[in-house]
Image (cartoon, rainbow, N blue to C red; front, side, top):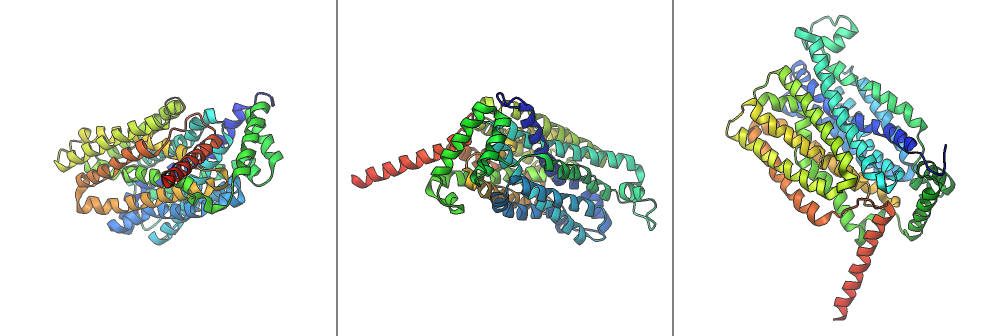
Length: 480
């Protein structure tokens, strides 16, 4: 190991382990899109129960995000990620064997707890181990892994469906072999259970990653923190970064209440509203109910599943493009361009459905364009920005609030989608999502600063500087 130059390979290795949590996030929240039709048929679910089975995982995510912030600040980023992996492993095994919809809902809530915790802890961990020049790219690995999980879930659903053939979902009095039960007659069990493999891998691999150096420094373990920084950045850069961290720690006062101080009002607004805007655009609805939406456009079941794979592939490819360019172009340009395209796409889909112009390819193209726009803007941008804007001492709780806001919004969107399509139609539903997306453009343009190339400590100093200028200006006005 060359401590003078550091090890980019080591940084990528531990980041990739952490992003398995993102893969599980994407896989878990998408696999139900293929299974729900068979679950609905077997248990005779109405629209409300259909939405609840799918969104129950999101309900768990809300709880996970709510507890993740305080836990990561108290126990450390690594320990909380391990706890999340335990929840997800238990859930995906239980999801194969429920006897009632209620049992399935409980199992998915437990998995949601793990996903919610991971959605907060993983971006924070990655942002705290990564040098400023690479942070946008490396943190975006997390979003890339989410999209890869989504893509794999679509593939798994389609492969299981095709392998089951004409007997797919035909429940008989005798179960037959375990394989036939899980992957043919009640194939939704096998679909949901395939998550067990990456969940167990995540659980095991977390044992070998280090704790966040910034969290260690905050808790008084300066020597351990320095060793990790040197291994990643090299001796010179590692010591410089450690010095910056120590300087910021000396300036910090207070605890959790610090996030409500005047200087952090704008970062707090960013942490809460940016994730909400992302999911008010309807991405959860499009991903979780992709086959259902595409069926509304006239595709057959297998055709809808095949096109869902295309959705997952485009999501993955354009997230990769965002990773490539986010540290070159910056956060704001990607967000503004992508949100504009997402708004126009949703508006187009809504108008096409509203006018009953549902020729399948006319509807599919703007949906795919929407996915592409979301993938290179909101997708990675949310996690990169909210993991940067708060100081180490309160970053966990602040990002936890952001993740909580995200999952509450995602749950509300996915819970209401079946009801909206059934009662007001797909056209009006997409128009609602379009008009909920429009304010995000103003928010990004006015509120969010560019953080490209800045260390976490420099970003914190930015907020401190703005607060100082505000105080000076206020005193000047009082003296007039």
